[in-house]
Length: 246
Image 1 (cartoon, rainbow, N blue to C red):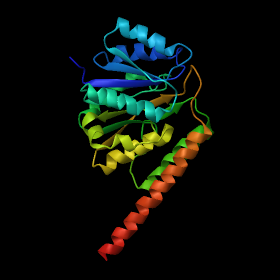
Image 2 (image 1 turned 30 degrees about the horizontal axis):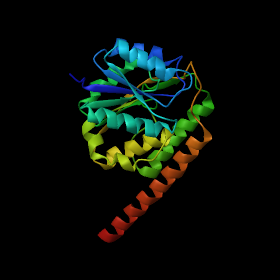
Image 3 (image 1 turned 120 degrees about the vertical axis):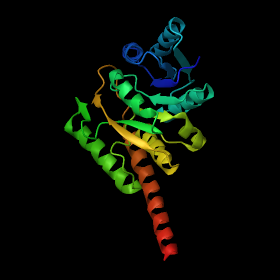
Image 4 (image 1 turned 180 degrees about the vertical axis):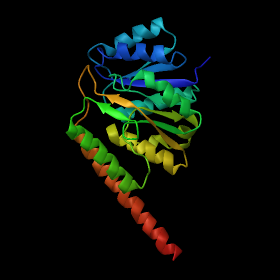
């Protein structure tokens, strides 16, 4: 029998952190299935995941031939999970920054909403071990997204989230090309434009202890460029509609 929830964990060189994260998910949400989406990690992450899957029928592994971005990894996970009939699909980092003990809080809301976001920037949300510069980058980026796209979400760049299979089936996932933080913004906006409901649940986000961050200038530039383009297009269409009504 297929579990209702699939937790998708993309990996690239996460051998130190992945076993800890998988064990934590199994402990705090034993009813869910896990799929590790490994991008041919040279450090043996994929091999560890294969061994874990042989020991535990609720762990699965999706191997990809090369490292080509977070967005592409999650799209592969969506396709894998939808094909197998899961009703809720969860995004979770391998590095422990998305804490497994908070997963039940997200899932408690998943039955009533199309997208549940584990949010750092709502009341009672927080981050741990971030410098002020990183906090300012994230809060200002999210403020810019709200202004450009006119959406009410406080943390649209957050990567700890749960989607309903129903809303994912409504979206044209083949048209999604965004990566990194931009992927999260893109998907959130698509859910809203499709008429889906979005709710934010406060989380404590903890900066990774193991491995290295995948954050880069290219990721920031992609998000800025695409959000600006989407925002200008969105506002122009609003103006055209307002003019036509007059």
